[in-house]
Length: 362
Image (cartoon, rainbow, N blue to C red; front, top):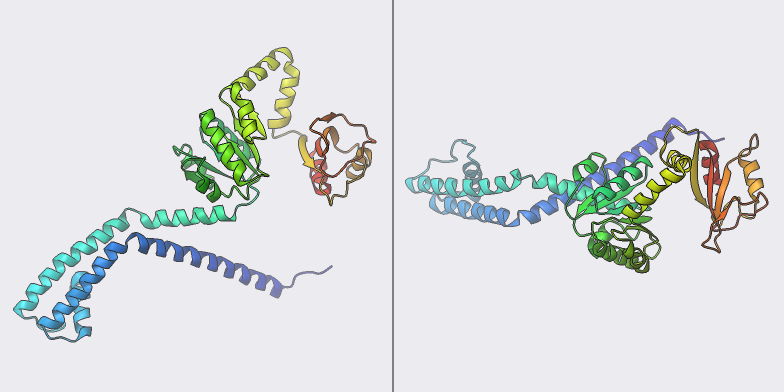
């Protein structure tokens, strides 16, 4: 077995520092360029006034260009150093003019900077870099009550996600979690591309109206054909329209809430069990879904063989259901002889160790 030497660790550490310094350098450079672009007119006027003031001293006092530049700088910034040479009356009048106009231009530039553009530009560039690096993440469109619950659930599951909302709701809370957040129209192609929709794993359309959610789904589907889209329907009649637009899953919260309440009345134990399995953090077992990939060790293995391989000392994870790759229908409680195929989606329940092992093998 090969072990890393101290020199190897040092080289890796230096390479990491080099990459970090390059990232910081590029970020600072972007911020400075954006800042110059934002203040270009103020900076141009200030530069023009420096040229005029320098020329005035050179002409009125017959000084060298270097002396004139030095006098202009200490005058405009009111440093108060002693004059380069004794000023004539004309030079004193010109100095007063230089102070008044120069101090005004410097004050305008300082006022622009005091508004926090550097911090805003820094945050904007950091946000852009964060979004550009995201891949396989989720996008929440609409941060109302439903969107906020989705965000808390994704954070609980330790999933990478970003959010967009027209009104900027819950922006401060997500900022504390370091979650990328954009304020704008979720149906805007440019904003969705900025959110990395072409690299995203899934998207939630949870805007307040069915019409806007429909546009969000249409836009997202046109930008990423493989995107897993879940949409909220305010009215049950909008479910079929959202699915036609490209949503993989559609939920009407009012309808779902009514069904759940009815389940608690009719089959309370079943409803309680589902809640505990999905949302309880301290269980000794967990329920998860995995997809059998093409290079999986489990391809063509039977369920029984898979269970023996994962848990030789016990029965391994229990397979609750399988959604075959060739069908949209679930196969509940499949027999132990059923062989796993590429693309099969398996719903399994077991200990955390069993589920982790199943993910690795799948």
